[in-house]
Image: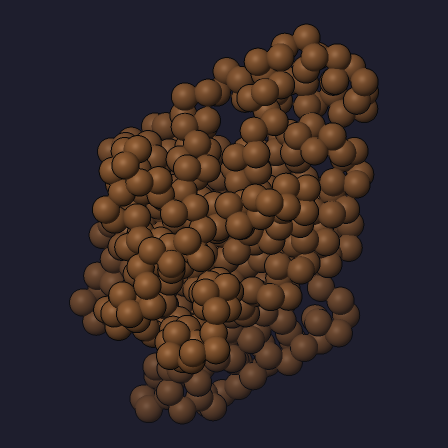
Amino acid sequence: MPVPQASHDRVCQAIRDNRSSLRDIADLMQDSPALALSVIREANRHTHGSMSEPAENLEIALNRLGLARTEELLARLPAQPEQEIPVGLRQLQLISQHATQQANGFFAGRLARLWQDIHWGSLLFLSPLWPLALTYPKLLEEWELRVVHKAEPAQEVEQQLFGVGLLQLGQALVEVWHLPIWVQQGYRLLIDEQDQLVKALHIARDNAHPLHQQQCLDADPALQRWLNQPANSVLLANALALSAQESWTGPHCMRWQYLTSLYLQMSMDELQQQLHQQAAQSARHHHMPDLWHPAEALLWPWEARRVHRGELPVAAPTAEDLAKWRKQCSELLVEPSRFSNAMHLTTFARDALVACGMRRVMLLMIDRTRTQLRVHQIAGLPAQASSLMLTIGQSSVLQRLLDAPAQVRLTPTNNAQFSARLPASLRTLFRGEHLLMRSVPSNGRVIMLIVADQGGQPFSEISVQAFGKTAQCIEKALHSFTNRSR
Protein backbone atom coordinates (compact mmCIF):
# COMPACT_ATOMS: atom_id res chain seq x y z
CA MET A 1 0.00 0.00 0.00
CA PRO A 2 1.20 3.54 -0.68
CA VAL A 3 2.59 5.63 2.17
CA PRO A 4 2.75 9.45 2.33
CA GLN A 5 6.03 10.71 0.90
CA ALA A 6 6.61 13.23 3.72
CA SER A 7 6.14 10.60 6.44
CA HIS A 8 8.33 8.13 4.54
CA ASP A 9 11.14 10.70 4.29
CA ARG A 10 10.94 11.60 8.00
CA VAL A 11 11.17 7.95 9.06
CA CYS A 12 14.10 7.25 6.71
CA GLN A 13 15.93 10.27 8.08
CA ALA A 14 15.32 9.17 11.68
CA ILE A 15 16.62 5.64 10.97
CA ARG A 16 19.84 7.10 9.59
CA ASP A 17 20.22 9.37 12.63
CA ASN A 18 22.19 7.56 15.38
CA ARG A 19 20.51 9.72 18.01
CA SER A 20 17.02 8.33 17.21
CA SER A 21 15.65 5.70 19.58
CA LEU A 22 13.23 2.96 18.55
CA ARG A 23 10.50 4.92 20.38
CA ASP A 24 11.33 8.02 18.30
CA ILE A 25 11.10 6.05 15.04
CA ALA A 26 7.87 4.34 16.11
CA ASP A 27 6.33 7.71 17.00
CA LEU A 28 7.16 9.07 13.54
CA MET A 29 5.55 6.02 11.91
CA GLN A 30 2.19 6.86 13.50
CA ASP A 31 1.61 9.49 10.81
CA SER A 32 1.43 6.70 8.24
CA PRO A 33 -0.81 3.80 9.29
CA ALA A 34 0.15 1.85 6.14
CA LEU A 35 3.83 2.17 7.07
CA ALA A 36 3.19 0.89 10.60
CA LEU A 37 1.20 -2.05 9.20
CA SER A 38 3.99 -2.96 6.77
CA VAL A 39 6.60 -3.01 9.54
CA ILE A 40 4.50 -5.13 11.91
CA ARG A 41 3.54 -7.54 9.10
CA GLU A 42 7.18 -7.94 8.13
CA ALA A 43 8.24 -8.54 11.75
CA ASN A 44 5.49 -11.15 12.21
CA ARG A 45 5.95 -12.84 8.84
CA HIS A 46 7.75 -15.86 10.30
CA THR A 47 5.70 -16.35 13.48
CA HIS A 48 4.00 -19.73 13.70
CA GLY A 49 1.71 -20.88 16.49
CA SER A 50 3.22 -20.74 19.94
CA MET A 51 6.81 -20.75 18.66
CA SER A 52 6.87 -16.98 18.50
CA GLU A 53 4.14 -14.58 19.60
CA PRO A 54 3.21 -11.76 17.19
CA ALA A 55 4.79 -8.40 17.92
CA GLU A 56 2.12 -6.47 19.80
CA ASN A 57 3.51 -3.02 19.10
CA LEU A 58 5.82 -1.18 16.75
CA GLU A 59 8.80 -0.97 19.10
CA ILE A 60 8.92 -4.75 19.43
CA ALA A 61 8.52 -5.09 15.65
CA LEU A 62 11.40 -2.67 14.99
CA ASN A 63 13.58 -4.49 17.52
CA ARG A 64 12.90 -7.83 15.79
CA LEU A 65 13.60 -6.49 12.31
CA GLY A 66 16.56 -4.31 13.15
CA LEU A 67 17.12 -0.94 11.52
CA ALA A 68 18.88 -2.33 8.44
CA ARG A 69 15.96 -4.59 7.47
CA THR A 70 13.49 -1.83 8.33
CA GLU A 71 15.31 0.53 5.94
CA GLU A 72 15.25 -2.16 3.22
CA LEU A 73 11.51 -2.52 3.73
CA LEU A 74 11.01 1.23 3.47
CA ALA A 75 12.89 1.26 0.17
CA ARG A 76 10.36 -1.25 -1.26
CA LEU A 77 7.26 0.67 -0.20
CA PRO A 78 5.60 2.98 -2.77
CA ALA A 79 5.82 6.53 -1.41
CA GLN A 80 3.47 9.13 -2.91
CA PRO A 81 2.39 12.70 -2.13
CA GLU A 82 -0.49 12.43 0.31
CA GLN A 83 -3.08 13.96 -2.04
CA GLU A 84 -2.28 11.34 -4.70
CA ILE A 85 -3.15 8.43 -2.39
CA PRO A 86 -6.76 7.33 -3.11
CA VAL A 87 -9.26 9.19 -0.97
CA GLY A 88 -11.09 6.00 0.09
CA LEU A 89 -7.92 4.56 1.61
CA ARG A 90 -7.05 7.82 3.36
CA GLN A 91 -10.61 8.10 4.73
CA LEU A 92 -10.47 4.61 6.22
CA GLN A 93 -7.04 5.28 7.72
CA LEU A 94 -8.36 8.53 9.20
CA ILE A 95 -11.02 6.46 11.02
CA SER A 96 -8.24 4.22 12.36
CA GLN A 97 -6.34 7.28 13.61
CA HIS A 98 -9.52 8.61 15.24
CA ALA A 99 -9.99 5.22 16.91
CA THR A 100 -6.43 5.39 18.24
CA GLN A 101 -7.12 8.80 19.75
CA GLN A 102 -10.27 7.45 21.46
CA ALA A 103 -8.31 4.43 22.74
CA ASN A 104 -5.55 6.60 24.18
CA GLY A 105 -8.06 8.96 25.79
CA PHE A 106 -10.32 6.36 27.37
CA PHE A 107 -8.21 3.28 28.04
CA ALA A 108 -4.44 3.87 27.89
CA GLY A 109 -4.37 5.93 31.12
CA ARG A 110 -6.38 3.32 33.02
CA LEU A 111 -4.26 0.45 31.72
CA ALA A 112 -0.95 2.29 31.65
CA ARG A 113 1.28 -0.78 31.39
CA LEU A 114 -0.64 -1.90 28.32
CA TRP A 115 -0.83 1.45 26.53
CA GLN A 116 1.27 0.34 23.54
CA ASP A 117 -0.86 -2.77 22.99
CA ILE A 118 -3.98 -0.59 23.14
CA HIS A 119 -2.50 2.07 20.87
CA TRP A 120 -1.22 -0.15 18.05
CA GLY A 121 -4.07 -2.65 18.28
CA SER A 122 -6.53 0.22 17.83
CA LEU A 123 -4.64 1.65 14.84
CA LEU A 124 -4.47 -1.72 13.06
CA PHE A 125 -7.94 -3.08 13.84
CA LEU A 126 -9.47 -1.91 10.54
CA SER A 127 -6.28 -2.53 8.53
CA PRO A 128 -7.71 -5.64 6.78
CA LEU A 129 -10.09 -3.26 5.00
CA TRP A 130 -7.35 -0.89 3.80
CA PRO A 131 -6.32 -3.01 0.78
CA LEU A 132 -10.01 -3.30 -0.14
CA ALA A 133 -10.31 0.49 -0.15
CA LEU A 134 -7.27 0.63 -2.43
CA THR A 135 -8.13 -2.12 -4.93
CA TYR A 136 -11.95 -2.20 -4.89
CA PRO A 137 -13.04 1.27 -3.73
CA LYS A 138 -16.33 1.19 -5.68
CA LEU A 139 -17.41 -2.02 -3.94
CA LEU A 140 -16.69 -0.54 -0.54
CA GLU A 141 -18.58 2.65 -1.47
CA GLU A 142 -21.58 0.59 -2.59
CA TRP A 143 -21.44 -1.38 0.68
CA GLU A 144 -21.54 1.89 2.65
CA LEU A 145 -24.43 3.23 0.58
CA ARG A 146 -26.54 0.08 0.91
CA VAL A 147 -25.70 -1.04 4.46
CA VAL A 148 -25.12 2.25 6.30
CA HIS A 149 -27.41 4.64 4.47
CA LYS A 150 -30.15 2.34 3.12
CA ALA A 151 -30.08 -0.16 6.04
CA GLU A 152 -29.98 -3.25 3.81
CA PRO A 153 -28.94 -6.50 5.58
CA ALA A 154 -25.13 -6.49 5.79
CA GLN A 155 -24.79 -10.24 5.30
CA GLU A 156 -26.77 -10.24 2.03
CA VAL A 157 -25.01 -7.16 0.63
CA GLU A 158 -21.54 -8.50 1.49
CA GLN A 159 -22.32 -11.87 -0.09
CA GLN A 160 -23.40 -10.12 -3.30
CA LEU A 161 -20.46 -7.70 -3.44
CA PHE A 162 -17.56 -9.74 -2.01
CA GLY A 163 -18.74 -13.34 -1.85
CA VAL A 164 -17.83 -13.39 1.85
CA GLY A 165 -18.67 -11.42 5.00
CA LEU A 166 -16.38 -8.47 5.73
CA LEU A 167 -15.80 -9.68 9.29
CA GLN A 168 -14.76 -13.12 8.03
CA LEU A 169 -12.51 -11.48 5.45
CA GLY A 170 -10.99 -9.27 8.14
CA GLN A 171 -10.44 -12.19 10.50
CA ALA A 172 -8.71 -14.21 7.77
CA LEU A 173 -6.29 -11.38 6.95
CA VAL A 174 -5.60 -10.73 10.64
CA GLU A 175 -4.52 -14.36 10.99
CA VAL A 176 -2.49 -14.44 7.77
CA TRP A 177 -0.70 -11.21 8.70
CA HIS A 178 -0.21 -12.35 12.34
CA LEU A 179 -1.51 -9.05 13.66
CA PRO A 180 -1.53 -8.40 17.43
CA ILE A 181 -3.54 -10.84 19.55
CA TRP A 182 -6.00 -8.17 20.67
CA VAL A 183 -6.93 -7.44 17.06
CA GLN A 184 -7.56 -11.15 16.49
CA GLN A 185 -9.62 -11.29 19.68
CA GLY A 186 -11.81 -8.36 18.55
CA TYR A 187 -12.80 -10.11 15.32
CA ARG A 188 -13.39 -13.37 17.16
CA LEU A 189 -15.71 -11.54 19.56
CA LEU A 190 -17.77 -10.03 16.73
CA ILE A 191 -18.07 -13.35 14.88
CA ASP A 192 -18.20 -16.05 17.56
CA GLU A 193 -19.21 -14.33 20.83
CA GLN A 194 -22.29 -12.36 19.84
CA ASP A 195 -24.40 -13.96 22.59
CA GLN A 196 -22.16 -12.43 25.25
CA LEU A 197 -22.16 -9.13 23.39
CA VAL A 198 -25.97 -9.03 23.35
CA LYS A 199 -26.12 -9.81 27.09
CA ALA A 200 -23.67 -7.01 27.87
CA LEU A 201 -25.55 -4.54 25.65
CA HIS A 202 -28.82 -5.38 27.41
CA ILE A 203 -27.26 -4.48 30.77
CA ALA A 204 -25.45 -1.45 29.32
CA ARG A 205 -28.69 0.20 28.17
CA ASP A 206 -29.83 0.52 31.81
CA ASN A 207 -27.29 3.33 32.21
CA ALA A 208 -29.50 5.36 34.56
CA HIS A 209 -29.22 2.63 37.26
CA PRO A 210 -25.52 1.80 37.75
CA LEU A 211 -26.19 -0.18 40.94
CA HIS A 212 -28.60 -2.47 39.11
CA GLN A 213 -26.06 -2.87 36.30
CA GLN A 214 -23.41 -3.98 38.79
CA GLN A 215 -25.83 -6.41 40.41
CA CYS A 216 -26.55 -7.96 36.99
CA LEU A 217 -22.83 -8.38 36.33
CA ASP A 218 -22.20 -9.82 39.78
CA ALA A 219 -24.91 -12.39 39.10
CA ASP A 220 -23.08 -13.53 35.94
CA PRO A 221 -19.33 -13.82 36.76
CA ALA A 222 -18.54 -15.32 33.32
CA LEU A 223 -20.06 -12.30 31.56
CA GLN A 224 -18.25 -9.91 33.90
CA ARG A 225 -14.89 -11.57 33.15
CA TRP A 226 -15.68 -11.49 29.43
CA LEU A 227 -16.61 -7.80 29.50
CA ASN A 228 -13.58 -6.68 31.54
CA GLN A 229 -10.92 -8.11 29.21
CA PRO A 230 -8.37 -5.37 28.36
CA ALA A 231 -8.46 -6.52 24.73
CA ASN A 232 -12.02 -5.20 24.44
CA SER A 233 -10.64 -1.66 24.56
CA VAL A 234 -9.38 -2.04 20.97
CA LEU A 235 -12.79 -3.08 19.65
CA LEU A 236 -14.65 -0.40 21.62
CA ALA A 237 -12.37 2.40 20.39
CA ASN A 238 -12.85 1.37 16.75
CA ALA A 239 -16.60 0.91 17.13
CA LEU A 240 -16.91 4.41 18.63
CA ALA A 241 -14.88 5.99 15.82
CA LEU A 242 -16.52 4.06 12.99
CA SER A 243 -20.12 4.57 14.15
CA ALA A 244 -19.53 8.31 14.66
CA GLN A 245 -18.88 8.61 10.91
CA GLU A 246 -22.63 8.14 10.37
CA SER A 247 -24.07 10.07 13.32
CA TRP A 248 -23.11 10.94 16.89
CA THR A 249 -26.63 10.16 18.06
CA GLY A 250 -27.48 7.30 15.70
CA PRO A 251 -28.47 3.89 17.11
CA HIS A 252 -25.12 2.26 16.21
CA CYS A 253 -23.08 4.97 17.91
CA MET A 254 -25.33 4.99 20.99
CA ARG A 255 -25.08 1.21 21.32
CA TRP A 256 -21.27 1.37 21.55
CA GLN A 257 -21.39 4.38 23.84
CA TYR A 258 -23.59 2.46 26.29
CA LEU A 259 -21.26 -0.54 26.17
CA THR A 260 -18.17 1.64 26.71
CA SER A 261 -19.82 3.37 29.66
CA LEU A 262 -20.49 -0.05 31.22
CA TYR A 263 -16.93 -1.19 30.54
CA LEU A 264 -15.48 1.96 32.15
CA GLN A 265 -18.15 2.28 34.87
CA MET A 266 -18.70 5.84 33.66
CA SER A 267 -21.87 7.91 33.29
CA MET A 268 -23.06 8.62 29.75
CA ASP A 269 -22.75 12.39 30.26
CA GLU A 270 -19.11 12.09 31.23
CA LEU A 271 -18.39 9.55 28.51
CA GLN A 272 -19.94 11.68 25.75
CA GLN A 273 -18.07 14.76 26.91
CA GLN A 274 -14.74 12.91 26.72
CA LEU A 275 -15.77 11.24 23.44
CA HIS A 276 -16.33 14.62 21.80
CA GLN A 277 -13.13 16.07 23.26
CA GLN A 278 -11.07 13.17 21.91
CA ALA A 279 -12.72 13.52 18.49
CA ALA A 280 -11.82 17.21 18.39
CA GLN A 281 -8.24 16.34 19.35
CA SER A 282 -8.11 13.76 16.56
CA ALA A 283 -9.45 16.27 14.04
CA ARG A 284 -6.76 18.78 14.99
CA HIS A 285 -4.00 16.22 14.39
CA HIS A 286 -5.28 14.22 11.43
CA HIS A 287 -8.02 16.03 9.51
CA MET A 288 -7.53 16.78 5.80
CA PRO A 289 -9.77 19.13 3.76
CA ASP A 290 -11.06 16.45 1.37
CA LEU A 291 -11.89 13.92 4.13
CA TRP A 292 -14.83 13.77 6.53
CA HIS A 293 -14.11 13.81 10.26
CA PRO A 294 -17.16 13.45 12.54
CA ALA A 295 -15.77 16.16 14.85
CA GLU A 296 -16.98 18.63 12.19
CA ALA A 297 -20.58 17.78 13.07
CA LEU A 298 -19.95 18.79 16.69
CA LEU A 299 -19.58 22.40 15.52
CA TRP A 300 -23.06 22.50 13.98
CA PRO A 301 -25.91 24.18 15.88
CA TRP A 302 -28.54 21.79 17.25
CA GLU A 303 -31.04 22.63 14.49
CA ALA A 304 -28.39 21.99 11.87
CA ARG A 305 -27.78 18.54 13.38
CA ARG A 306 -31.50 17.83 13.11
CA VAL A 307 -31.33 18.87 9.47
CA HIS A 308 -28.29 16.60 8.98
CA ARG A 309 -30.29 13.66 10.36
CA GLY A 310 -33.13 14.43 7.95
CA GLU A 311 -35.65 15.64 10.52
CA LEU A 312 -36.10 19.19 9.17
CA PRO A 313 -35.98 20.73 5.70
CA VAL A 314 -33.11 23.03 4.84
CA ALA A 315 -33.83 26.71 5.52
CA ALA A 316 -35.15 28.71 2.58
CA PRO A 317 -32.71 31.00 0.74
CA THR A 318 -32.43 34.50 2.17
CA ALA A 319 -33.45 37.61 0.27
CA GLU A 320 -29.78 38.29 -0.46
CA ASP A 321 -29.33 34.74 -1.78
CA LEU A 322 -32.34 35.12 -4.09
CA ALA A 323 -31.11 38.49 -5.34
CA LYS A 324 -27.77 36.89 -6.26
CA TRP A 325 -29.64 34.01 -7.91
CA ARG A 326 -31.73 36.34 -10.06
CA LYS A 327 -28.57 38.14 -11.17
CA GLN A 328 -26.95 34.84 -12.16
CA CYS A 329 -30.05 33.81 -14.12
CA SER A 330 -30.19 37.16 -15.91
CA GLU A 331 -26.60 36.59 -17.07
CA LEU A 332 -27.70 33.26 -18.57
CA LEU A 333 -30.52 34.95 -20.49
CA VAL A 334 -28.45 37.69 -22.15
CA GLU A 335 -28.82 37.65 -25.95
CA PRO A 336 -26.89 37.27 -28.06
CA SER A 337 -25.03 34.72 -25.93
CA ARG A 338 -22.14 36.25 -24.01
CA PHE A 339 -20.42 32.90 -23.46
CA SER A 340 -17.18 32.11 -25.28
CA ASN A 341 -17.38 28.33 -24.78
CA ALA A 342 -19.38 25.60 -23.07
CA MET A 343 -17.22 25.66 -19.92
CA HIS A 344 -17.86 29.39 -19.57
CA LEU A 345 -21.62 28.80 -19.79
CA THR A 346 -21.68 25.89 -17.36
CA THR A 347 -19.69 27.89 -14.80
CA PHE A 348 -22.50 30.46 -14.67
CA ALA A 349 -25.09 27.65 -14.61
CA ARG A 350 -23.37 26.03 -11.63
CA ASP A 351 -23.16 29.32 -9.72
CA ALA A 352 -26.87 29.99 -10.34
CA LEU A 353 -27.77 26.57 -8.89
CA VAL A 354 -25.62 27.22 -5.82
CA ALA A 355 -27.22 30.65 -5.38
CA CYS A 356 -30.70 29.13 -5.26
CA GLY A 357 -29.68 26.95 -2.29
CA MET A 358 -28.19 23.78 -3.80
CA ARG A 359 -25.24 22.60 -1.68
CA ARG A 360 -23.95 19.86 -3.95
CA VAL A 361 -24.11 20.34 -7.70
CA MET A 362 -22.88 18.38 -10.71
CA LEU A 363 -23.35 19.34 -14.35
CA LEU A 364 -22.68 16.58 -16.88
CA MET A 365 -22.60 16.83 -20.69
CA ILE A 366 -23.34 13.97 -23.08
CA ASP A 367 -20.56 12.93 -25.44
CA ARG A 368 -20.86 12.79 -29.23
CA THR A 369 -21.62 9.07 -29.24
CA ARG A 370 -24.47 9.68 -26.76
CA THR A 371 -23.24 6.76 -24.65
CA GLN A 372 -21.48 8.56 -21.82
CA LEU A 373 -21.84 11.58 -19.56
CA ARG A 374 -18.77 13.59 -18.56
CA VAL A 375 -18.60 16.04 -15.67
CA HIS A 376 -18.30 19.71 -16.67
CA GLN A 377 -18.81 21.45 -13.32
CA ILE A 378 -19.07 20.53 -9.65
CA ALA A 379 -19.77 22.40 -6.43
CA GLY A 380 -19.67 21.08 -2.86
CA LEU A 381 -18.15 17.76 -3.97
CA PRO A 382 -14.62 16.27 -3.68
CA ALA A 383 -12.22 17.32 -6.43
CA GLN A 384 -12.04 13.71 -7.63
CA ALA A 385 -15.70 13.98 -8.71
CA SER A 386 -14.64 16.16 -11.63
CA SER A 387 -13.18 13.08 -13.37
CA LEU A 388 -16.39 11.04 -13.05
CA MET A 389 -17.71 9.45 -16.24
CA LEU A 390 -21.11 7.69 -16.37
CA THR A 391 -22.12 5.07 -18.93
CA ILE A 392 -25.73 5.82 -19.83
CA GLY A 393 -26.63 2.27 -20.86
CA GLN A 394 -25.89 0.93 -17.37
CA SER A 395 -28.67 2.92 -15.70
CA SER A 396 -32.35 2.86 -16.64
CA VAL A 397 -32.88 6.20 -14.87
CA LEU A 398 -30.13 7.86 -16.92
CA GLN A 399 -31.56 6.36 -20.10
CA ARG A 400 -34.97 7.82 -19.32
CA LEU A 401 -33.55 11.24 -18.53
CA LEU A 402 -31.40 11.32 -21.68
CA ASP A 403 -34.14 10.10 -24.02
CA ALA A 404 -36.27 13.20 -23.37
CA PRO A 405 -36.19 16.23 -21.06
CA ALA A 406 -37.43 15.20 -17.60
CA GLN A 407 -36.99 15.83 -13.90
CA VAL A 408 -36.66 13.18 -11.20
CA ARG A 409 -36.93 14.02 -7.51
CA LEU A 410 -35.79 11.41 -5.00
CA THR A 411 -37.55 11.30 -1.63
CA PRO A 412 -37.59 8.77 1.24
CA THR A 413 -40.67 7.23 -0.44
CA ASN A 414 -39.07 6.44 -3.79
CA ASN A 415 -35.37 6.52 -2.87
CA ALA A 416 -34.89 2.76 -2.75
CA GLN A 417 -36.63 2.35 -6.11
CA PHE A 418 -34.51 4.92 -7.92
CA SER A 419 -31.18 4.47 -6.08
CA ALA A 420 -30.92 0.86 -7.20
CA ARG A 421 -31.09 2.07 -10.82
CA LEU A 422 -28.49 4.81 -10.53
CA PRO A 423 -24.70 4.34 -10.82
CA ALA A 424 -23.21 3.59 -7.41
CA SER A 425 -20.47 6.18 -8.00
CA LEU A 426 -23.12 8.90 -8.35
CA ARG A 427 -25.10 7.86 -5.27
CA THR A 428 -21.92 7.71 -3.21
CA LEU A 429 -21.23 11.36 -4.00
CA PHE A 430 -24.86 12.39 -3.37
CA ARG A 431 -25.63 10.57 -0.13
CA GLY A 432 -29.03 10.99 1.43
CA GLU A 433 -32.65 10.42 0.48
CA HIS A 434 -33.34 13.74 -1.25
CA LEU A 435 -31.99 14.46 -4.73
CA LEU A 436 -32.97 16.38 -7.88
CA MET A 437 -31.99 15.27 -11.38
CA ARG A 438 -33.01 17.15 -14.52
CA SER A 439 -32.07 16.72 -18.15
CA VAL A 440 -31.75 19.82 -20.32
CA PRO A 441 -32.23 19.86 -24.12
CA SER A 442 -30.86 22.00 -26.91
CA ASN A 443 -32.34 21.97 -30.40
CA GLY A 444 -34.63 19.10 -29.48
CA ARG A 445 -32.01 16.73 -28.00
CA VAL A 446 -30.92 16.34 -24.39
CA ILE A 447 -27.27 17.38 -23.99
CA MET A 448 -26.94 18.14 -20.25
CA LEU A 449 -27.82 16.47 -16.96
CA ILE A 450 -28.10 18.48 -13.73
CA VAL A 451 -27.72 16.63 -10.40
CA ALA A 452 -28.17 18.65 -7.21
CA ASP A 453 -29.22 18.39 -3.59
CA GLN A 454 -29.13 20.28 -0.32
CA GLY A 455 -26.63 18.06 1.44
CA GLY A 456 -28.93 15.04 1.16
CA GLN A 457 -31.51 16.64 3.48
CA PRO A 458 -35.17 17.53 2.83
CA PHE A 459 -35.39 20.34 0.29
CA SER A 460 -36.61 23.84 0.93
CA GLU A 461 -39.56 24.08 -1.47
CA ILE A 462 -38.50 27.59 -2.49
CA SER A 463 -35.14 26.14 -3.56
CA VAL A 464 -36.90 23.40 -5.53
CA GLN A 465 -38.95 26.00 -7.41
CA ALA A 466 -35.82 28.08 -8.04
CA PHE A 467 -34.04 24.93 -9.27
CA GLY A 468 -36.74 24.42 -11.90
CA LYS A 469 -36.56 28.04 -13.06
CA THR A 470 -32.76 27.87 -13.16
CA ALA A 471 -32.95 24.80 -15.39
CA GLN A 472 -35.24 26.73 -17.76
CA CYS A 473 -32.71 29.59 -17.87
CA ILE A 474 -29.89 27.12 -18.57
CA GLU A 475 -31.94 25.61 -21.40
CA LYS A 476 -32.44 29.05 -22.98
CA ALA A 477 -28.74 29.83 -22.52
CA LEU A 478 -27.77 26.57 -24.24
CA HIS A 479 -30.14 27.30 -27.13
CA SER A 480 -28.76 30.82 -27.55
CA PHE A 481 -25.17 29.58 -27.30
CA THR A 482 -25.50 26.70 -29.80
CA ASN A 483 -27.31 28.93 -32.32
CA ARG A 484 -25.17 32.05 -31.85
CA SER A 485 -23.58 31.87 -35.32
CA ARG A 486 -26.77 31.16 -37.23
